[in-house]
Image (cartoon, rainbow, N blue to C red; front, top):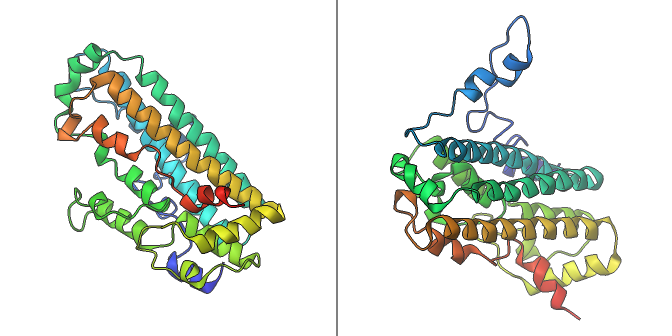
Length: 287
C-alpha cells in the first residue's frame, strides 16, 4: 500500500482490528476451552428478554447475530480495501467472495424473522421501548464504508461517543469504490484526476469519465473486470437485503411506524433500488 493510502486509512487496519465495537481481546487463561475461547458465558448471557413472551427470544437472537455479521463484514471490507489499494487481485477476489457469502446469510436470516406473525411481534413490541434497528451503529458504518455520505447517519449519536466517531471516520476516509478507483489506476487505467483525487467526505456521484474507464476495463476482460463484477454482486446483494428488509417489515407491522418512532417501511422503501456503485451499472448502457 502506498504511503498516501496508509495516511488516509490510518494504520491500515479496520476498526475491527483496532478493537472496534467492543472488539477487545478477552483475558488469557491458563487453560483454553471451547467455552472460554468463544466467550460463551458472555455470549449466551447476552439475551435478556424484557417480556414473558416466547417470541421475544427469537427477535433478540436474530438481531444479535446481525450485529455479529455486520462486525465481520466490516472486518472483511477493511481488508478488501487494503488488498485493492496494494494491487493484490487474487486475495481481493477471495475476500470479496467471502463477503458475498456472508451477505447471502444476512439476507436469508430475514426468512426466520418472517416466521413471526404480526400478533406475535405485537405481544412484546412495547418492551422494545425507544430502541430501533435504525440505531445500529455498525450498519451505519457499513453504509459509510460502501460510500454513503449523509450527516443524518450520525445525528442520533452523542458528540464524542464511540459510535459517532467511528461512523464519522468512515465517512471521511476513502470508500470501497475509491479503493477500486485506486486499484484500477495502479493497473494502468487512465482514471480522471477529479475521480482519483476527489473529496472522500462527499457522496459518490455518477461520472461519465469513470464509466468510460470501466468500459475499457470490461473490454479488456482481465482480472480487473472480474473484480468489478464481484463488486456488482455486492451491490446487488445490498439491494436484495434492502428489498427483503422492507417486505419483512411490511409483513410484520404493515404501514405503521417502526419501533422508537422510526418511519418503518415508509423510509426503508426509499432506499430500495439505489445502487451503491452507480458507475458500475451505468457503464452497461454504453455502446
